Image 1 (tube, one colour):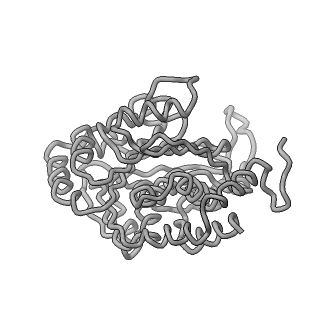
Image 2 (tube, helix red, strand yellow; image 1 turned 135 degrees about the vertical axis):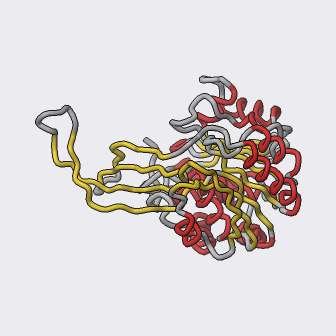
Length: 353
């Protein structure tokens, strides 16, 4: 086990931060973050309602081989592309959101209420389907997940509705400095949308999430081009069909397939690998001391680092900022609140003091 410093970080983290401070000043990082405000950002992806159903275990049922639980309380959060838009809105002044809702149980009022004031949404409504809801049952004291029930129709969207959405994107995308695609593989963004976004966006940032509903069928190479890719290690291994290769080599392969994109590969407790468009690699450690809930941390990382890369920020700075964002995000239950500039700046100051 690595020796811990006085402030609680391992020696390897202290070495990274000491070397980072030789290359960049705190004033430089703060100026880079402040400059994000001017960027116009478009977020595209599925709206997801995250329901947390908190339970207390009662014990094994006498007639079944299951543990019975008692419902304690529930909580609804704006997740998926909604959470991404809220994260970006804390750093960039002008944010537009293109997302899909269901015609049945749309939750539109809830969604509007939870979006920040500087997020302008454009909803496309699918008849006969619900807005995506992911209901997670957890033991309240420890946030241990018992099981999950998803409400969704993940078949491709009807052709007429897809055509309407593609027309909106075709007209809208070129006006934005940054387009962030949060693609959860639940049917909203098909191949035609992926191709259009790759062709029309000035700067395209993409995450294609691997989850229980799409595992093995949804990878980042669905997009013919990207300026920035942000995926985790299992997702890049799926995309390259490589279980054992070095992550840096896989990053270079994906960069080549998508036109030389910059990339962040998040690796949980192993930190993050960032790779610039010129191929320069940086390994950045984790900065979190305690984890409350990992859900949503990847979306937070994508949402804040995408405008950072678009603005020309050095990729080691992107990695530090992203890891700081993730450290803040894992201290929040799900998407209960967004990561904000003030909190991030304060945390970065503590790292570089």
